[in-house]
Image 1 (cartoon, protein in one colour):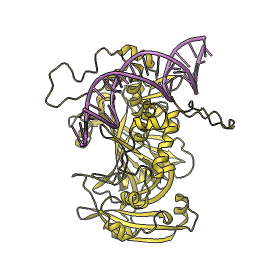
Image 2: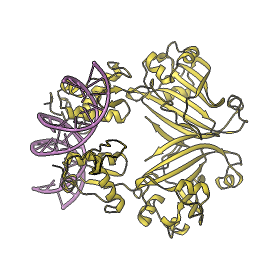
Image 3: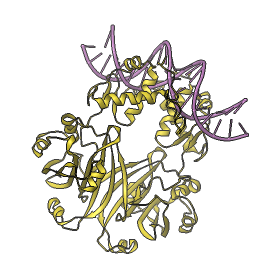
Image 4: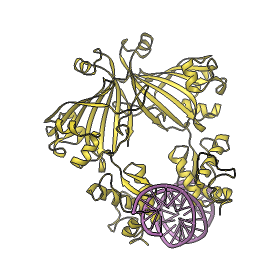
Amino acid sequence: MPADPPSTESASPAPAAGPAFSPLYQQIKLLLVKSLQSGEWKPGEAIPSELELAGRFRVSQGTVRKAIDDLATENLLVRRQGKGTFVATHAEEQIQYRFLRLMPDDGPVTGMARHFLDCRRMRAPAEVARALGLKSGEPALMVRRTLWRNGQPVVLDEIWLPAHLFKGLTAERLAQYAGPMYGLFETEFGVRMIRAEEKIRAVAADEATAELLQVPPGSPLLSVERLSHTYGDKPVELRRGLYNTTSHYYRNELS
Amino acid sequence: MPADPPSTESASPAPAAGPAFSPLYQQIKLLLVKSLQSGEWKPGEAIPSELELAGRFRVSQGTVRKAIDDLATENLLVRRQGKGTFVATHAEEQIQYRFLRLMPDDGPVTGMARHFLDCRRMRAPAEVARALGLKSGEPALMVRRTLWRNGQPVVLDEIWLPAHLFKGLTAERLAQYAGPMYGLFETEFGVRMIRAEEKIRAVAADEATAELLQVPPGSPLLSVERLSHTYGDKPVELRRGLYNTTSHYYRNELS
DNA sequence: TAGTGGTCTAGACCACATC
DNA sequence: ATGTGGTCTAGACCACTAA
């Protein structure tokens, strides 16, 4: 017994666009995302049970269930039978960072050692500003770091963040935090990454990069440009990684 | 009213492995996949309606629905409201090949011109045999081709196939077929690709490759090694692509 | 034992495509 | 008008977890 019938559209007269029918469970999804975004339920915490949410929204359990199913598929929520439904988090990653697809040719997928090179506040270059939706010249943070495995540097990352969202971020802060960087972003800055697009190319190592990754200049490297988004598809991080793929590969699944 | 209750396990005594509870809709999924695999419903065709399948399997529509939902998520089936549920196919791809993630830096995603270099039957090298699950030395087909956009070669593919599954495949046959190669595999050889894994690296162009792709020797190229599987997760194609990423990039989505 | 998510049913009604 | 998939409900029971 919903409060209102599925409400094919709002009370306002039909806009020229068309019918725009939205099923109940989609509306529930929006309400759930709003609660996630507002911080009512924090990463790692349990959300209310399906029955409780059904009561709150005055819909059946099945409708809430379908909404949660969708959000679980989108990796916003995690279901655990017998325990509850939890807000997904980057802070509890087991083996490796969730967004890092780099696998070693042999051996297990162990963690990688991090080494922060610098963390500077500067005006966002035009290209960065455009990607992050900043006005050109707005302040941004630029972090550079390397990732190591077996005593060899494998990844060089250059990370751009809108300064206004990450006030107080320093290289020390990054170095002393134990878990993945996206975990720190969640707990310290309330910014949760939920989706990303990557553009991958092969490039030649320039002088500076070659030295940092300990390869000959001109060596082929994998360039991975990642734009990460938070709730509402708002872009909040631009990251360019250069991967030495002589003993690692980028793994992808197609279906 | 199912024929049997969900049958926590088969009639046989419990194997040491454990309970192995399998819900009804999972069992329905297996039956549907079996029908797909046997060719009862061919790529592009409609499968029976949910109600009809529910009758056939003696379960409720909801249970069939959940099974089909799963298979649609796995891209084995495609739902079309008001029309029916159809067997997915590579033969009706609109813009581009479904498994090709290469995007132009600018301009629309147009089709690419194909040029077949050769198609030879030979013994599978050890590495290929291992990937395809062949005995070493078993016959295999090796196809090489290039893909062009705007009069420039962009992709060089080397494709390995088990010879026994693709009897009669020739370069002429490939050249005269209009649609994507996986479409030809479906219609002419009854082999449908449903899933693939890719290993991506940056490599330097060797002499022969450099000439075919019209780049200087040593240029960085994207190496994309793809292992494609058909029903039952059986590997049936090993493909190594070399992409010139100066005006294209490999696009990936993370979530 | 109680509470959670997971499965399954039966039936009603809606949106979409086709005739 | 008919048939398809899509949504929603109400209720029963099962599997898993934790106290």
